[in-house]
Length: 173
Image (cartoon, rainbow, N blue to C red; front, side, top):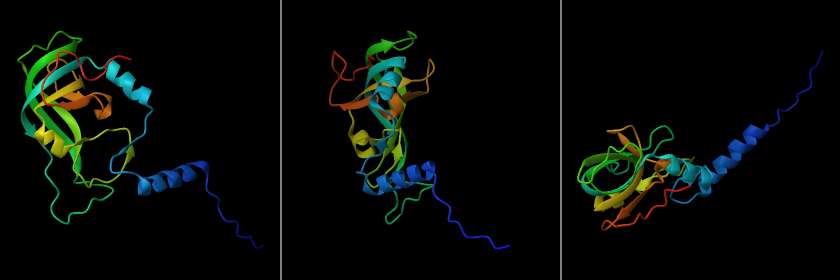
């Protein structure tokens, strides 16, 4: 008995993968957000802390070696930076644990120019901008006492030249 060759057709999931891969080749220099804006807003609104911080120390990811190439399983241009400083303003403190003048360390998703273009939910901050930051306004998640991480998958952060009496970031739903 002879069986006829019947080519397999792609399913809907394969089409989604192809579209996603095509999107990677035509994306801009930043990771493309994969979540709707209201999802980020809900995460930020649920975060327990909203503060402004005078930056005093930075642990930044190192710049990749000259000629080093990013790989799908390892991207030397992207990682987590830790910025430390003193709390200058407190706009929200759900646990009543934060005080002005108190030290705080915050983990920030960060990337160097040249990072692989990604489709994903994390918003990365520019390492060079973080290196020059004097102040940050951040909405953070974390247990009382830390460790703290930028809320909204990295969206809850802005770099400032000086503190302000009113928040720059909107932390309300």
